[in-house]
Amino acid sequence: MFIINGIVYAETGKIENGYLQIEGNKIIGYGAMSELPTTKEAEVIDANGQLIVPGFVDQHIHGAAGVDTMDASIEGLTRFAQTLPKEGTTTFLATTMTQSIAAIDAALAATRTFIESHNQPGQAQIAGIHLEGPFINCAYKGAQPEEYIINPSIEMMQHFIDVAGPGNIKLVTYAPEVAEAGFVEFLVANNIVPSVGHSSATFAEVEKDFDNGLTNITHFHNASSGHHHRTPGVVTAGFGLDLTVEIICDGVHLHPDVVKTVKKVKGSDKIVLVTDSMSAKGLEDGDYSLGGQKVIKVGNEARLEDGTLAGSVAEMNSCACNMKNFTGATVEEVIAMTASNAARSLGMDTKGTLAIGKDADVVIMTPEYQIEATICQGVLAK
Image 1 (cartoon, one colour):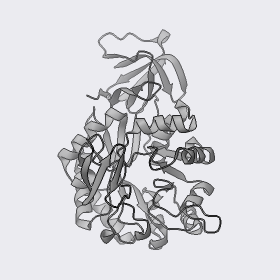
Image 2 (cartoon, helix red, strand yellow):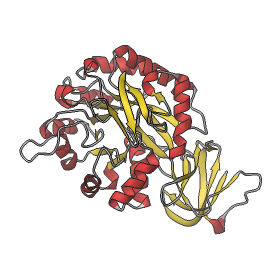
Image 3 (cartoon, rainbow, N blue to C red):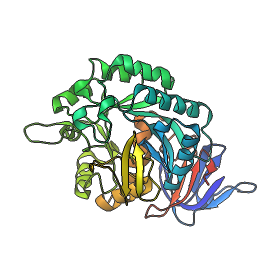
Image 4 (cartoon, helix red, strand yellow):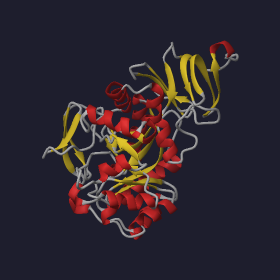
């Protein structure tokens, strides 16, 4: 496959009028159109002057198109994976939520089966699991059902690892202030990214785990202790420590001025854009379910009956466009925040940039982040 006549945002720099060459599921070349090899017998996609960028990596997403990870359905996960390329996402972590241990186990087992035998070129790849809940604090439960919340323990974490399969749990959201001693070290030893979230932790509690391997904050500012000049919490730690922070940039979860401030303080290399979307994404307004709780979708908001935000219905390309509009972020900065930062943080060496030898996960989009085409593992998504 050749993608021609586009602005190629390669790992080595921008090529104003360039091409990208794909063989199988890998990128094997790129350059200026003046250097284009023969395209005889190759599939050719004309980008028509649009942007050619790496596929987006969404490390925090519960569902879309009527599907939720917690449904524990191979058919549902397939529809999930087939839907996401429409918004430019080529790789994602199927994200669980607080539920009974049996329900979480079922979701982990189904996702394991999907990862092992159902990932296909031409659809977004489930690269692993984000375990969000049950290891959180009731004080900041958000839309997570309180009756199933438990304290983070090594024994239960080992159980989830055993069910999900070796290496499949990539990221765990947890509350440090209620965690068993050694929990964060256990995650790090198992190559799992620790992420503080749904937490009332103090700055000091976050810093202690940061010294022991904590690297991330889940949906920064949302469902965690805030910034206060006498009682600094998770948000203060996010600003003050060298932590990577998730942002739901849908214009609902964070005010644009807050997004602007986060980018100014953290820089584009320490921000990961996520959707945190739930099953109502892409569907009409109405009543839906999240973890057995009624969720009402109206426009670009999804809320529980009491008004609590219940994830989002945002698409990655619209979050990327919002980041550009709110902060003036360049295309290169948005690529970092939508692809390369998450890939690097999660240890996905073949994802996140357009480089020779990397997976052929590619998006063709307009400067306004409208998706023209998405290639997943070398195959054009339908």
